[in-house]
Length: 266
Image (cartoon, rainbow, N blue to C red; front, side, top):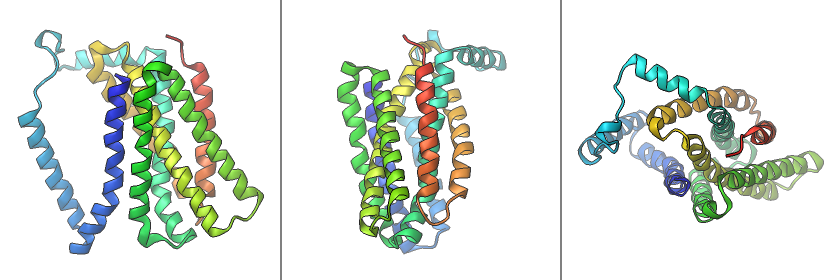
């Protein structure tokens, strides 16, 4: 399952690579409102494709009735598992770093480095290179295990973030050198996210095969709400440099290290 999730994450990482370029192309042909019409068209096409091409995967005998009682019982069982609670918190912290980066990165390119015009191309390169994280995870996870891969990804990102933060605090970096450091750090952030998110999902769902749909929905919803709540203050703290972002992600990384120690053994 972790291997399959890694492949899915590799595809997922390709989406942000194409998104800014697609948005820029739409705005070159029409105004910004056209982006919402494109969203609507994609939603319609995706719904039709799913409805016509994707059959139900759950056997008839294993389906649960769609009722308030059934949903409540499933949610209560999911919430009672410690491993689900911890992996959900970890996913929230990881996505908080991702959302904070997405909300700050274009401003950093523009106000700090004067490279707003080239942001879509740089972002595409960052996302495509970072997709290698999913490929690496898919090859190593069956040998090393999910916990080891998650731990490695979180430690690499925390170490890289603290190093870049220390360099900015210790000495004035030349603009080109600072920009190169930002690009390499962003690649690591996206790459380690790709390595850890699929594994965390697989780890959480491992004991919940009979409730996979309910569990996946709850975990994703709670992790997303938590991540937005954590990312908003970091995004609002942006003042023209990457320092608030690096500090915020360092704090998220330190909290993730504590949670990994509390993760129950198999």
